[in-house]
Image (cartoon, rainbow, N blue to C red; front, top):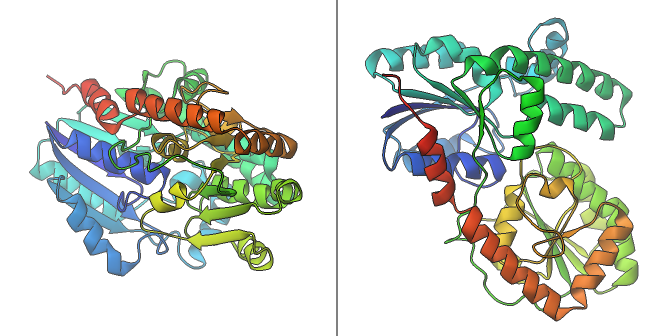
Length: 403
C-alpha cells in the first residue's frame, strides 16, 4: 500500500517517547508498504538546521519520500502572540500551532501525484488537514488523550493565569476531539486506559489500542545492577511532564534520599534542562546533570535504580519500557506506569509520595535478590509484550485500504 504519514515533528533521531514510537512504527510499517512522510519541524533545539538533512537521509532509508516543512509558530515572539490570539479562536492553541499553508500545499500536490491507500495522522492537532487527502481511510494516533493531559496539568500548575489558560485549552481540545475523532476510520490509542478515556469523550469513535514499544535488541541488560548508590532518570527535559517530574524529585524527594543515603548520586539525562534544574545541579554535587547523550545504555549500566517520578501527562512512558528492556529495577509513580501491563512489586515498585520513594529506594538498595528478580521479570515483560516488531505488526494489521 501507499501510506501517507503526517507527523507534527521530525521523528529522527529516535530519542524521547513520541520520537521513538513514530520512528520505529514508521520503520516497521515501511517493511511491507511504501510510506510517504510529511513532517513539521518546529523546535530548533531538537532539530537545528545542520541536522535536518541528516534526519531526512536517515528517514529516507525506509520511507519512499520525506518532506520536512519548517514552522515558525514556535520561534521568538510568535508563540506567546499565538497563545494570546488563541484565546479568541474556536480552535485550541495545540491545533493553531500546527497550521501551515506550506504543509497543506505539499499534501495536496503529493496526493495528486501518488494514489494513497491509507493516511496516518500522528496527532489530533493534524486533523486540520483531514479534507486535503481525499476519500481514503484515515487513521489518527493519540500519543495521549490531549484534553485529559491538559486537564491533569491544571492540577499541578501554581500560576493562576496559566491555570486559567489551561482550563480553556482543555475545554477547547475536548470539543475538538468530540468533533473530529468520529470522522476518522480508526482512532489509535497507546493503552486500554486511553481507549476508555477517549471513548468517554467521543463514544461514537472507532478506537483500537496499539501499545508503545521498545527496541529489545538495542536495550539489552548489560550486567547485574549491583548496589552502586546511583539513581537515574532519562527523558527530554523540554517536555513539561518530564521537567515537572525531575524538579519534583530534586526538590521534594532528593533531600530525603540524601538524608537516608549520604553516598547516593542522581544522574539526570535529557536535553534542554530548565534554568531551575541547572541551578539545583550546580549547587548540589550529588546531582549529575548530563543533558543530551548519544547512548544512555552505559549510564543505566552504572546505576542501581531507575526512577520515574511523573505526575502529569498521559499515554504510556517509553522511558519505563527502555528501562525494563535493560533489566533496570524501577521505582515509579502510579501515573508513570499508567497503561502498561506491569505488575507492582514484580516488574516495578510504585511510589506516589516523597516518603514512598525513599522507602522503595531503600528496599531495592538493600535487597540483591529483589533487584535481580525485578530485573528478570521486567526484561521478560518487555520482550513478550512490547517489542517494536510485535507492536508494528499490530498496527499494520489494522490498515485496511478502501476497495
